[in-house]
Length: 419
Image 1 (cartoon, rainbow, N blue to C red):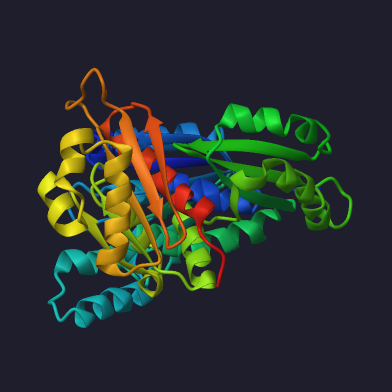
Image 2 (cartoon, one colour):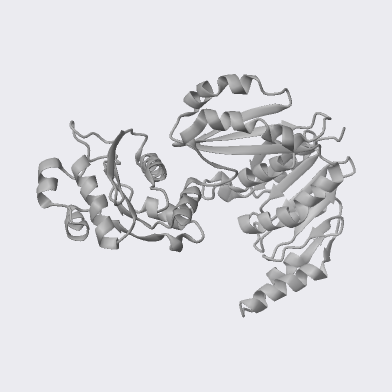
């Protein structure tokens, strides 16, 4: 049976350790490696110091057969990775002409002069297999170590790293290591917590074959279920994996909003397109977050018409038509107010569907009657207006994120059928 190598990631850069940059590269690489059956055993972050990088390389080669590095390949003095690797593999730097042409083309495209430091980026250790980077100025490097360990160095810039991984690294790893077959199925759920979902599908999960495993991947307001099937020597691995899905779909029912790597906003957008409906948002406490999520989806201009961020009562009255008497009697954070916000937005923007939010995201602004974490949401279409109260407080940022997810799910659940 093919051998599955252990993979380790080393991220290089003081900015990661200072918290100035968040390491999103490792998460993305983990997802992509998992799709081809490779598992990351460890992730390490080190500073821009030669001794630290060498120590990390020595330790990694004792644990893993594949070591993936990001960072430290820029043109400035603190970018040491290439020089450290040249010394580590006892190799001189040599000009790699294809990369020089790539760098020249990038500067020509932007009509900017190329500096000598940029030209130096095309010099690579002679011991490496260069990985052409046609979207940036720093090529990647692939080293086959004498002990059978593969070392790969890539830029830390996410879109450059993703280009090299997709174009070069993942195909070479699959070819070199002949990774055993692995299949995944992803079910996206919203509106039910992880523990409740687990209880709901416990009997189904317990009857899974030994080579299939379910992972719960929760985020705030949603849970991603990933079913993974590993090679057991029997045929049709994909077919046997998919045969397990109808039963769990029936169990999770209304909480299932999509299958595969699909966001809630993308799934909702698809429903709006299929049903020929338009949508707008009237947002107070969420400050435009729902609109941002909806418009993050390519093609959203086909169904999203606009938003009113009605943070003040004056805007609620003037732009959305909320009655001053309603605000005076019930307050901005109330069922009556969000109903009028949603209905007013429908009239103002002439949309089929509207979602409105008002609440106290915190950390201040709460009262005994309406503490921080009190939220009202309203959905309106031409058939109905539905309001919902949500009470939760996990801090301002998480409150807003959670309420935007609840709002999108509220639209999904009440969306009228195509007419």
